[in-house]
Length: 257
Image 1 (cartoon, rainbow, N blue to C red):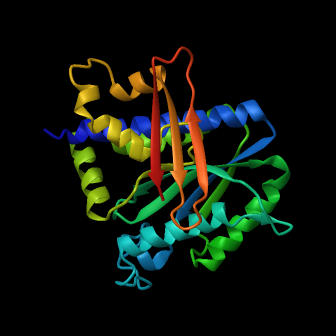
Image 2: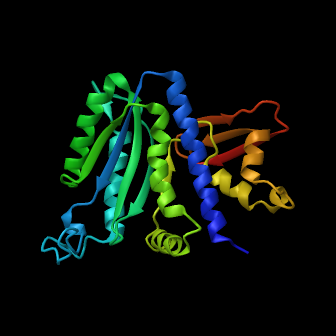
């Protein structure tokens, strides 16, 4: 039988595992700046004023939860995918989560890692994309000085909405996520476990049958994983690997995108 609480806990584990890998990479390489960014939808998405609780005259009934989610995603994609300095793309690593306001309008929290020399360029780029996508002044940018605490910044937001012991909160959050097709957790994947592979392992009863420990942890700790992705149009091949000490097995995955 499908256990929704366990499914969400595993989803949380997948996200935090990859976020920690990302944080470790940033710390090991050095020379990075970490920015904590919050994007909130403008007034037209909020039916009632947060302060006065009265009807908001700027509210637009066409500004739905789904449209708001799309606007935030588009803005964020423009931020991390289209960042250029002197006409050259600059890599930005990220982890992001969505959560609802009390009126269920979504907002986004994320961590951005960029080489320190490009910090000011990225901040200006963020502001430019927010303006282009008409988010108004609904954003906050904070620099995290202690890079080793970057995961904890996101963790407090993730925990708030994934506490399965608080059944009412969990039920409401899970219903919001499903009803509006919101992908709560997303992050840059390095050598971690991609979500599609994670789901295959989790749902493979041949692997998980009679296994007392978490199957994902078991496989990550004991298996080398090779993922070969072929682009259908360009035929370009990309390879990612997850290497462990003293592997018991090697998992080879081929997929098309």
